[in-house]
Structure formats: C-alpha cells, structure tokens
Image (cartoon, rainbow, N blue to C red; front, side, top):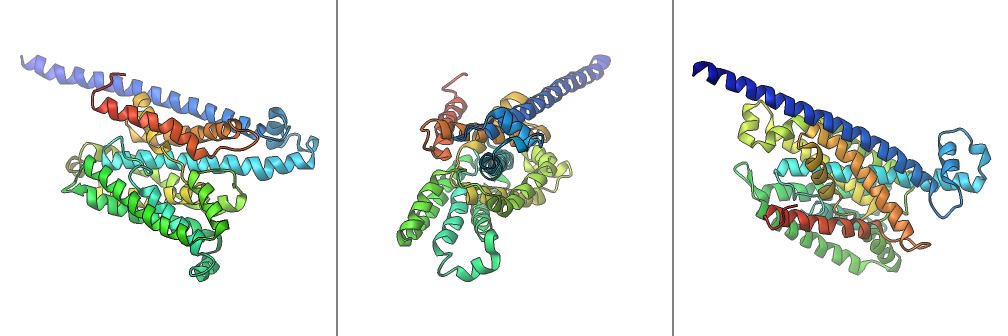
Length: 366
C-alpha cells in the first residue's frame, strides 16, 4: 500500500507535466499563427482602400524596395493615411485586448472588460472634458501639455473609474461579480450624465466631433496622435508581461498568492494603473470601441488555457488583428462612406457576450 501511495503522486505529477507541456506547445503554436495572421492583415490593410494602389505595390513600397514606382499621391496615401491608421489600430486593438485579459485576471472573472465595467466611460469623460473645455476653461492646461493633454485626461479618468470599481466590488480580498457589474453600470451612467452636461454646452463643431468620436473610428489617425497616445499604450503593453505570474497566482485566490510569495497589493496597483493608461490613451484617440477586451481573452482561454505568460502576448496579437479586420469591414460595408468601427465591434461582441452569459448559467452547452 505504501508503495502504491508513493507511486500515485509521482505518476500524477508526470501526467500533469505532460498536459502542461502539451498546452505550452499549443500556446506557442497559436502565438506563431497569430504573428503570421497579423503580418498578412498588416500587408492587406496597407494595400486596400479607395486609392487604386495594389496590394503588391503597397507591400513592396513599405518594405522599401520600390517606392519610386509609386506616384507622389500613392506615397502620401500609404505613408500618411494608411500606415498611421494601421499602426493606431494595432496599438488600440492590442491595448484593449490586453487590458481585458488583465482585468479578468485581477477580478477573477471572464466578464470583466474595460468597456463593460465603466473604465472606458471614465476615460471617455476625461477626453470629452478636454475636447469641450480645451478652448476655454482648460486652455492653460492645453497650452502646457499640448498634444498630451487628451491622453492624460483620458488616463486619469480611466484610473479614477478603475480605482472606484475595485474599492466598491472587492471586500476582504473577494470580488463580487454582481457588485462589479452593477458598479460598472453605475459608474458608466454617472460618466454618461457628466458627459451629457458637457455635450449640452458644446458648440456645433464640437458636437459633430463628439458624435463621431463616441462611435469609435480610426479615420482620423495621424502620426501626431500616435506620438501622443503611443507612449502610454506601449508602456502598458510592456509592463503587463511582468504581471503574468502575479495574475496566475491571484486567480487561485489572494491568500494562496500571498503564500506563493506574490506581492498581491503591488500587482493590483500596477495592474490598475496599467489598464487605466492603456485604455485611457486608446479611448482618447479612437473613441468608443467596445467588446474587444472581452471577446479576445475569452476565445484565447478556450484555445490555449488561462496561463498569462501566453495569454497576454496572444491577446495583444489577436486584438490587433481583430481591430484591423473590423476596420477593413467598416470601410467596405458602406463604401465609399465609412461605418464607425465601434458599431462593427459591438455587432460582433454583443452576441458573443450574451453567449458567455448563457454558457455560464448552463443554458447553452456549446
């Protein structure tokens, strides 16, 4: 009996190692496939649009092998319109997806998402405040901060929302899902009310800008916007890999994480600031693009498992690819006009979110 009891754990550990090894290999294969998918979508987006520049010409020009064969107009289209749009879409898609994965790990719930729980609403309120009051009350702030005023305002708005949400939803180290969702709805409603006041006092041009900004779009992508928001987004993306081990431990429970030597409070604080920076900067330059943060991490968890060292980079790649696909759809559906990209992501994400809810309640077995 003693021999059997000693051998059973050993065989169990070997089985677990084999399973973990298989999952790691699958995760690496998925990440490699996502890299290839993103490169193909990048080149496709570079060659698609209203201009008659072909896919091959655009790809060769971007790689630096034949830009002299393109006209000045085509070079301007590629370098000043398409390329900034692709880069911005990549940054925004990656940041929203990674922020969703971090929040889901922090709250230990697959329904957490910057858009659903009110973080994006807080960031939007900060951005709207700058847009409406930037020429009057906040003109000195604009003069000092310049192009960084908008992403900074969105960052602090998202940070305030995230901190409030965490304080309301978490008690004694346990996060209530119902409280989280209800608090997110309340925070979103409050931010919407304050935004409505600002919209009420806005002039006609500001109202038009706010309308299209609120629907979400990459149409106004410029290198200036990328330089303004890019540092915040990149900082968030570069920090998140260092949170992977801590998030894995927190998923097991905060008490367990403490026993494993993880500084839970430091991980929480870093995650909150990271999500606020990435989401705030993304909302500032692209407007309301929802559901990316809930669709992407959930799909990847079903495919490669919950381990964050693989989940976070995979989320960045799939989020960027998904937004490039959504942007392509937005330019094709009502061509030559352009459908706001937030409508496309909502049309894809809302049914998926409903499926997650039904699946968790056991009403669907898919």
